[in-house]
Amino acid sequence: MKPAKLIKLLYVQVIIGLVLGITVGHYWPEIGAALKPLGDGFVKLVKMMIAPIVFCTIVSGITSLGDSKEIGKTLLKSMGLFYALTILALLTGLAAVFMLQPGAGMHIDPKQLDAAVAAKFASQVPPRGFVEFVLHIVPASFFGAFAEGEVLPVLLLAVLCGFGLTRIGGAGRTVLDGIDSFAHMLFAAFGFIMRLAPLGAFGAMAFTVGRYGIKSIGSLGLLIGTFYVACIFFVVVVLGLLARAHGFKLWQLMRYIREELLVVLGTSSSEPVLPRLLTKLERLGCKKGVVGLVLPTGYSFNLDGTAIYLTLASMFIAQACDIHLSVGQIAAMLGLMLLTSKGAAGVTGSGFVALVATLTVMPDLPVAGVALIVGIDRFMSEARALTSTISNAVACIVVSIWEKACDREVLASELGQGYARAEEALEDGEDLPAADLPRIAPIAQTAGLH
Image (cartoon, rainbow, N blue to C red):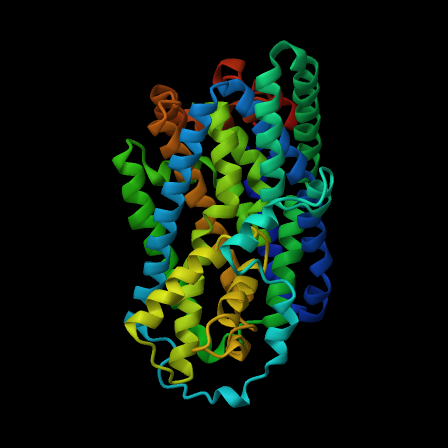
């Protein structure tokens, strides 16, 4: 591919932004630390679009499915898969921290830890009990859900509105047409925002390297290494076997969504790529209604990267402070993390907030222990977001296959050749033919998702 055409590819631009960010942060750390608003601003722009996009996608998906029993069955299977993956993720983190013992030998006195670090995040903790968690999903008002920008309340509204439109039939045709048109506009606007992804990745990476630097890792490097090993194991083994069992290859899927993964890597957030993943999963032959239900739900209920982080960080604090936990205490902690991991949003720092929430109700571990890892948390947030993003993409395809809502021929063709065709089309200066974008060609072409 010619260099002039290659530079037009989003993932190439993001790579350039990452390299420049690392360079600036390393050689000019003060300038790099001052570039944090670039990354934060990009993530805020994306979050502004997430709630209406999720609403429109789910409403359209429910009305396309039509049968309420089919919708309930899809959601039930999705939640079952999400919780199974979360349990495996928690156990993966637990196994990694026991095998590599990153906190052993530190002999930290909990009384000497700075409790103010945890207090700063205490007001951000998600709901602790099941009842509180359920009530938190219900927004104070219809538009309040959009104002807060949280996915679960918007998901609830979308499901209710989708069922309502299905019930009234033809009388709701005008409303549904308006929602579809609004969705086209949102995806077009999101296409403009995504052009800023390289700038956001540049700012976020420059800040991380400039603010913390390589020296800040210090003796905690083993903890970071342990976490990355656990995430790689979960993706390659757990998700890889799940994908193979359902007839597709994980590495092909990761290659297919590599642009999105690079954006996640640069911004340490999975939310910026949600709209693009919705589009690409439909392009893979997954039914629009299933994708619209499963993927947004997974963003709140399938944060496997956060689950790995919770068990690993908690046990690291226990090891560092010479606190021995019994099997029963560890089991109780895992049960609690099944809840706290679901309350974390897919944005930078949510894993750390979920950790504070977990330790707050765990009397056996000091909440102040988070002071040990607050300085290096940023180095682990990328792996958390990447792991969760890959897991949600795999889960969406798997549920679509279970529901017989995935065209296996389209899936195999797109994963095997689709990305190559997309690059050839871009090299020739053309959009993909409509035949390659079943059901979503107008949205994809309008948004520039080539």
